[in-house]
Length: 551
Image 1 (spheres, helix red, strand yellow):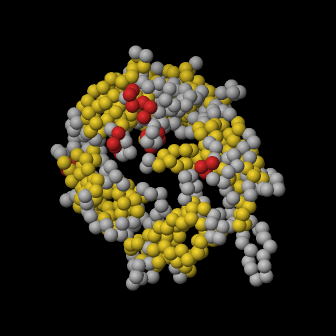
Image 2: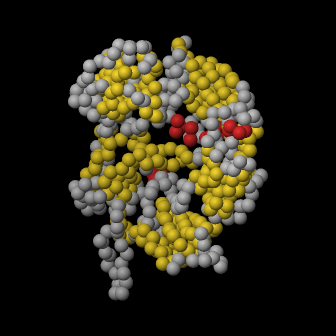
Image 3: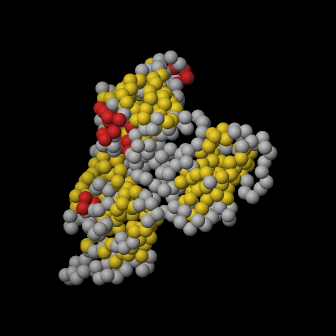
């Protein structure tokens, strides 16, 4: 599990010392030791990342030597964070006993030497077991997948967290960080060489293994989620797969009347269920007629894409197939559109904040072939994004600096800042984007048990806008408990300080409900800086024994 508090930043120029002499007293040193938390043995080649704590963080990286030691030398005065990773172990952060808690900060004075850091890494958890067929014989090359329950766009889904194949003896072992998982087994590759008896002149269908969820069901809603605790091994997570005839989908891809020949034609079949697992069929297309073999009965989303006379086309069909498969399907292709619009600035400093481009990314998880959908914004604020296929699209405005915020986005009369933007082949309305300046901001102090506390501070929009992810802001309060949130959109918010916090939690529409009474209501106004004192909400996430500390 990667900590949500690990940052991506630029390189920090410093000397990395492994067994070398100490640098001149004017420069600082941070050094320490990485051990296996169970055996107390040194860990070699662990990756140690040192990060500055400022508005533009920089990173330096060192690897532990054979004795588990690391050191960073020639360091200037400043504040630093340290993270440690190693394959097969859970990641660790200095001053934090959980990856959901903000890491601690090392304040390094001029010439100070801190060589007392100790990290005890916990071995990753694992699940293991065997995969057999109906006769109890081992099955090789069966894919075992672990998926985390999560949310996207307010809808529950399962997100891939790892996978492994079974060996020739049907055994598998999958390392996982702590968490709760949906675990399943599915066949990889082509249909099985199993043939049932058939009448003369008939071709028996190919057979395949039915995907199975732990603890032995072929329906995702009947599965049991497996809770994995830190450093634990879970054995006998076994699967017994049954075979059944595989089915085929057949039909035609239908271009609009009088359309030219279709080029770059593709068709993808994805299993349509709560798990959204990536089961895809191999499509054979000839003269717009398609056939997809090797599928098990169930619900599928078929997505056809093509280029006709230089323009993108897309067709989507959702189908339910039984034991006989499906024939005579028809997938109409719809043309893409050219989406035109304008970007304007409401407020001072328009020349400084006018973005250079507007781009679209898929918001419906449907396959998309082709170049990124992006347009340059002209000096007058006009843009045109060419070849936008029908579907749901998210809008990105780049760059949107710290001196601006998204004030409104409308597709014709529709508010697409707070609602989904669904493009149809008949869409003709312009996209109007308004950038506001200056943004709102808020700063304050966080305390815990009456003392300043380092915590995750979350700015969440009022209830009717909780689904709008772009309205959220989060920062980490420093060691003195001070926090500051900039470039916020003016409006009414609830402000929370969490002892533990996973940024992905905001996708869950129910996440904040238990804490509503513990948050503070704040009204942010354009160009004004608000102030608020907060008390940490404790115990809001799973505990872990992954620590970095001073010896």
